[in-house]
Image (cartoon, rainbow, N blue to C red):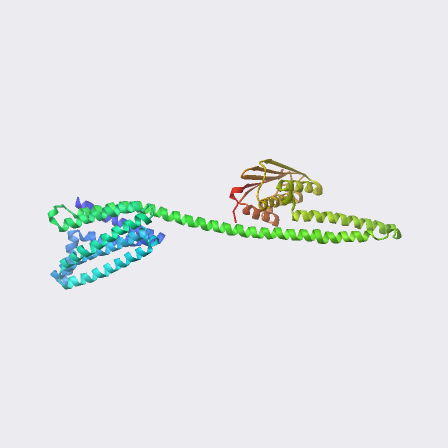
Amino acid sequence: MEMFIWNMAISFQLLFIIISSVIFIYLREKSFKYYALYNIFLIMYLLSRYDSVYYGFENLLAGFIGTTNSKVFTEILNFFIQVIFYNLYSMFALYFLDLDKRVKKYFNKVVLTLRILGVLFFLFAVLSYVLKNSDLYILLYTFIYLPVMLSLFLISVVQSVNRSGKHKDFFLFGVTSYICCALIAFTGTFIPSLNIKNPISFFYVGIIIETIFFSLGLAYKIKIINDEKNRVRNLITIHKHEQEISKLEGLMEGEENERKRIAEELHDGIAGDLLAIKFNLSNINVSTESPVNVGVLKEVSQIIDNSCVQIREISHNLSPSSITNFGLLQTVENLCKKMESVYKIKVNFNFSGDEININKNVETHIYRIIQELVNNVVKHSQASIADVSINYKKPQITISVQDNGRGFSEEQTSNGIGLSNIDSRIRFLNAKIKKDSHKQGTLFTISINLDDIYKT
């Protein structure tokens, strides 16, 4: 039975050397590096508990340093290996429980204590070997090393209970079982009066229990690490989206300001100059002019009137002040009427749903999308009828622009400033656009969820 448990313990440690090494390479978490090193030294100790290995090593050394020296050296080495793997296990536990991040001062003090203990017990090992007294080393191990390590364990448990994540529950149960079993094995070995049969078996059982519960804690720890990575990745993605949206907002705000400036210059500048020209022409004494010149003057005056109307239309399209004055619906309806009168194409407008009361900036972007789509219909589709509809069921706005024109191919829509501007505004509104084109016409459908619009 003892041999079966010993073999199982060895198998578990070999397995977790591989698992810990792979996880360390993948995640670069220091706890798994220390766990792999701990398992390596623990296997060395477990092998030493097998008599043929222990005495085989001792006899091998006897050929070099003599029988007495070999016996003392092997006994001291056996306990020094325990110092090493307990130190490595403590380092693993500190990192695994995230005490290096949560209580850095305490973590640094424990690490310093472990280093001092490691150096001190190496010097004790050298001293005990020189004195040829392995019992001295065992006494120092029993009355100095073990009490200090147990004290550190109890304090670390308190720290982890208050500071560590939920993965600590599995780990603490496993390590507590491990330490209890190790203490039973130790006392049973050195106090024969307790009559504990095969006390080392308790140590093997403790290792198995610790490994099982560590694997559960490991699974939870990896979940926590992945959740944290996903959280950081999502934050980075959101930040990039915010930067992109902020950039788009700046570009479109600049575009709107430039549109407004050009509209004002057209209205106040060129339109004013044309009116001044018309006024001066009207002051010419036509009675002294020939009929031909009179006709020319009338024709020029008519051209000026038409130009003023066109400039006024362009100015209003560039800067739709009616959005501020009358809202989105009235502005879109006016756009449809103007397109109908100028391009002689029937443009129907329909609205359904709740009353729209949204941000003017959002209304402007929606208007620009509709304006661009309607412009494409009247200029390129060769349609006779177009339908513009808006449906609002809070918080969802659905816009559709449909015509009975010749349709388009995907290649035709891949280029062009107009559609590029639409795509920019779609991204800003975090909306979705669907394009459906065939020989009987084209349908654009835009879906906007007002709750999903990025806040900048």
